[in-house]
Image 1 (cartoon, helix red, strand yellow):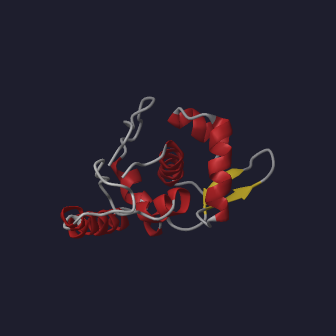
Image 2 (cartoon, rainbow, N blue to C red; image 1 turned 90 degrees about the horizontal axis):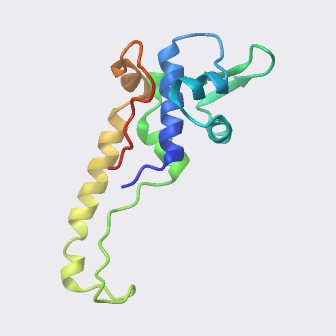
Length: 150
């Protein structure tokens, strides 16, 4: 399973908002600066998170974004599904057969891929934005998130 840059940026923005523990909105520019993210790209992501009910925005000179619900109620699974779509089962394409043709040997792997998918869903639903924010050092320096791939 690959986590897109778009989803990773969205998760990082939400963790930044959760870590701020503020009732005041945070501007996109400040979130982008703290996370080392491109602000224009982040604008689109935040709009999508707003449409999904994860953040709310406030206009004006002191405007920005706030979490729409407690960070402890937003799971990584919620965000990944919202930004990237459903968690698809892992498959393996056998290059020796056509796309339509699945051999008995290939079909034998289906329960394995299903179990991996279900385990992934279970794990992602266990972690909240708050649990990740709580694990971030108080004053992180620059970019501290590696490029994740699951």
